[in-house]
Image (cartoon, rainbow, N blue to C red; front, side, top):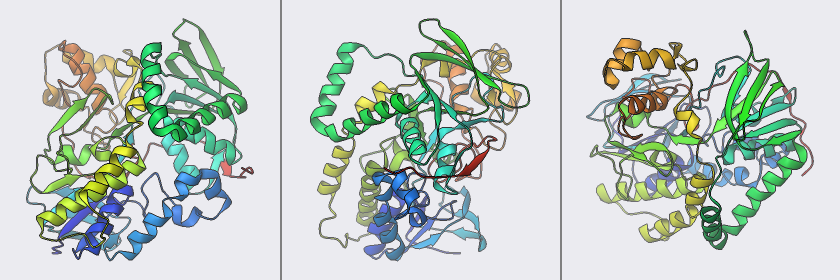
Length: 473
């Protein structure tokens, strides 16, 4: 049995940054991650892509991760790629399986840095082959360097959807159209949030504005105010029907639809450990209850990065460093780098989060996500529809009874894809606000399953791709 000082689950920006600080200070650190190379989703494949035309097409922010990956490789932490964490006991005994077989690790402390997952956005037909998440499509851009062989339709909202469209066009792909599902924001509130954001981070706002301008210029069509979607087809996607807030309805013929409605903290690991979680109304998501260091309700577990609350790659780096500093304090060590202090990390984290209120409000998910119609499949694994769950809820059952009666959340993804929607249906049935009925805990494996953008996997539908032919910047 291995007995390191620190076990880190996840080798994305937060996990790597924490490992660098901890290992350089002399701690024995093991980092496990399901992916074959470090970087998480945001910097996936960075070692292979940096310095190539593909890397340039993916953008400067993507390529900036190479320095962190190199520092991680050289810091002295033990790194186990392609390794799945199956279970973490309350005593921190951790069971993992990877290329070296199955092992048991007994660390003094654990840091969970499993990143984010795309928000499940169920609608009629979303399980048809040919419907993919934007995150899954972006994985194909970064890893094999493939783009869809036909013009694609993108539906949803959020920075990732815009970024992907921008990257796809630069890599030679074509966006047939963009169905924008952003709810309208009151003008006064928009001006207030935009004014604060401009004062603090005008460069990032300008970049986002350029993405929108490029999308409107290069996409075949741009349709705002979409409130309802339906994927059409029998054995695979054949088209999309959409409805706008003004009542306009149209059908579009396509065999590939990419969807994205923002991201959520990856909570499966924390929930499985019984860590306390709470509803974050600003981000319309559950997140773990943490103190300023990332310590959760379990005394020896910390959570950092987007798994602690959505903030982006730069914020994840500083959250990882702060958690590492706390771990050093608890184990009687100090940081090796003179400038690595609590004050500098907190100041950097504050700067990285200045745009968060603006982004959370502007890209707030539409209400229809939380209340899909009766014919929509909610639990993909068990093929349970909304009407199946509402019928069970009519008997005034609780979350655990609903799971037992219907098997919702008991499939391979262990509730990663249906947990949020089920919680919304329970809250509605009981006449309570969202957050009053938190999603139930899942089971092993912990760093795997559908939907994860940090250390796990994203749902990939059936599509046809070809090698990318990057366009000149």
